[in-house]
Amino acid sequence: MTQVLLLPADGYWSKVRRTDRRAVALADRHYSRQTVGAPEFMASGRTFVMLTADALAVWGAIENLDPAGNRRWRCSIFRNESMVLSSALIVEATERTYAYWTRRYHGLPPVPFTTEVDPTKTLRKRDPGRCFRKAGWTVLGTVRGLVVLRAPSVTSKRDGEGK
Image (tube, rainbow, N blue to C red; front, side, top):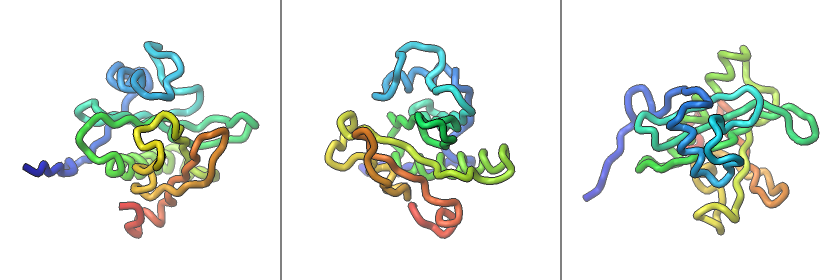
């Protein structure tokens, strides 16, 4: 039997606080979690956290400073334990993150929106970041053993790229 998963009318994601207990529980099971059980799972900075209605996927984006002191915009966590394709969740989460930043900052960030994937900690060790690439993100390279990916631009997303 084939299961068909339809996109809810209002989408999969809802904005939540960085202390939402359901989001914290998912974050505790993510490989990047620094302090399991801590009441917050996002680094310091301006955050945008979303959770799916079934509380089986979490997305966290942040504006903060990189180790060199430069401003950056990045997806710091994505964990999906649901039956929905990760790439579908990433496409919508990326769009909602761009929409949030556009409203909050009256325009898009002047720096790329990125994420990092640790190939030694993912299920697809030979193909790290595959779900992000299927969602239209591109590989920029490798830094300190992490695969760095960049989100598609808003204009390319509107043209249907990454679906």
